[in-house]
Length: 179
Image 1 (cartoon, rainbow, N blue to C red):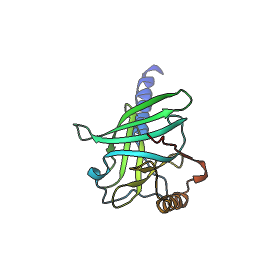
Image 2: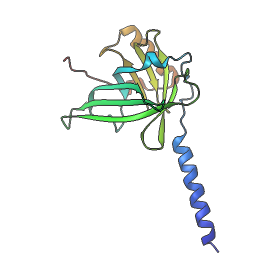
Image 3: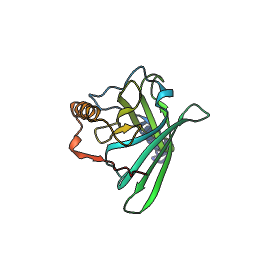
């Protein structure tokens, strides 16, 4: 008699896990930009700073390149040089909008059906500098179209991040070789 309940319970648990894995969020005090222009955002970005996590640990010269896939999703091509392993590492994923394509709230996946929040919370009018919030206060990036960022933009992004609740003293400032 107990066996007839196992399959429905396992099925329900599996569905709940998939729905939870696909859910994306944004930190409580953060807001994704509106009037977002995907065409201006596509292309190559240099990572200036990040809150470190296992998939980017020990990486410098990190970049992210965004382009359109045939199916309308955004191809995410991340690359960085692992200074410990002395080799380049690359990770390719896909991103899609959570709501509308003019709101900078996306979800990104590098592992099948599992998505994580990617929220553009600040961007300059020329799309040269961006502040990205992950799904929680554990994930944050400062990006630039060049390997540096002006001090006034850096200060404004750090202030905004602190107001949201990020501990900016934990940021890793990425080194870029001058090639």
